[in-house]
Amino acid sequence: MASTSTSSSGDGTHGIAPQDVTLAKPPVTEVTGPSSKEEEPAKTPTATALSEDNLKNLEEAERLKKEGNEHYAKDDIDGAVAKYEEALQKAPEASTKQRAVYYANLAACHLKCKQFEDAVQDSTAALELDPTYVKALMRRSAAYEELDDLEHSLADSQKVKELDPDNALANKTVQRLTPIVNERREKMKDEMLGKLKDLGNTVLGKFGLSLDNFKAEKDPNSGSYSINFKQ
Image (cartoon, rainbow, N blue to C red; front, side, top):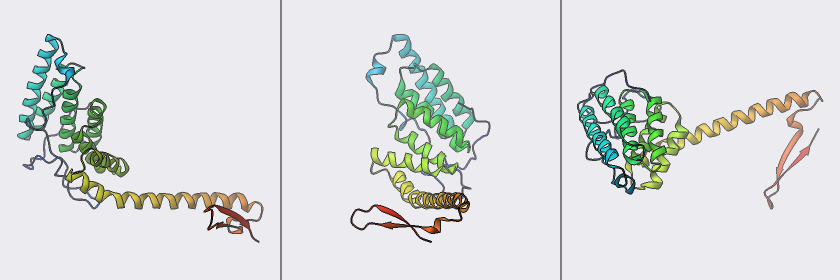
């Protein structure tokens, strides 16, 4: 888990994505950063089963998280990162929901500082602890998109749609990325077929033949193909 070494851009918002992205998409300012109200995990049986010492450590970790949120709200990203990392060090391993929040908050900080690979790493750590954590999925989706890994970005947003069909940001992301991803898939398929054709012609050329000597015909009844040879 890498610490940030740059400060916030000071754009005065709690949006995470930078403003200078190409890829024919709007700035991902809808991805929210951490706040004390929205980042409070639900109490779980795991938390209530902790020992007295671990409960004290968890309370301290939650206090550190809230301090981190206050730093984030003031655009003090380095200060926020320090508090979230302290919270992770303090929180018991069994407090998976809370630890997932701390990792997701670190991901928000990395997004703010355009450290997209680190954002993916910390979002993934959060999702390993809480696979249905919508904010972690959306933050990782935003980071993947900035890294031009549109396949994974789309997959994360589609997962959010499954978990929360009314999620506006996920719906917009899926709508925006689906045609781009499909176009890239088609282009990749055409490139692969072209390479295979070149390879086939290279091999067949040794026998005075080419792929043009073979014609694929589809059976309208079965849908299967037959290969016919022609001179």
